Length: 186
Image (cartoon, rainbow, N blue to C red):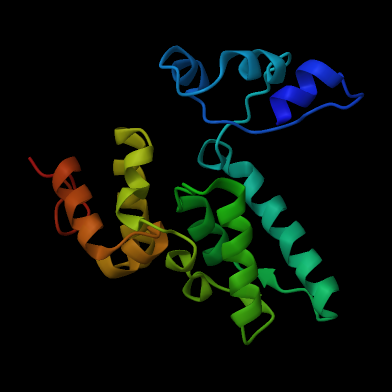
């Protein structure tokens, strides 16, 4: 129906949409209509995933917390240093939507005005935590795993900071040859 309207009725509108990054492949595989592809694609804007622009995490989180406070007529909650570090370590496979859900869920359930890393509940928003680390570059994964371990002091804490299950973290440690004390295995 959208294609029919855009092709035949020429409405005075601009359509802004998001799409799978493999849309060209889908057109060549005939799983997406080429005429719709060309109508929707006069300008292509690529927005990097949140995990590649970690400097956006704190301002976005602050915005979500401010909006939440206004909507609930409450004091605005703040993120402490541990929460900021945990948010920056998380891979964000769900991008900004996942960040928003995580921050709002935490703000809603928080008993204090200061949110710490322990208050964050990444598993609440992540449908398949085992795949989250697989979305990034291997060297970055290894560095983030070691950094999470050093920050938390335990593998359980590191898994929580990374937003993955302990089983997934064990698999990642094996894959990256990271020893029990966070050091590379020889």
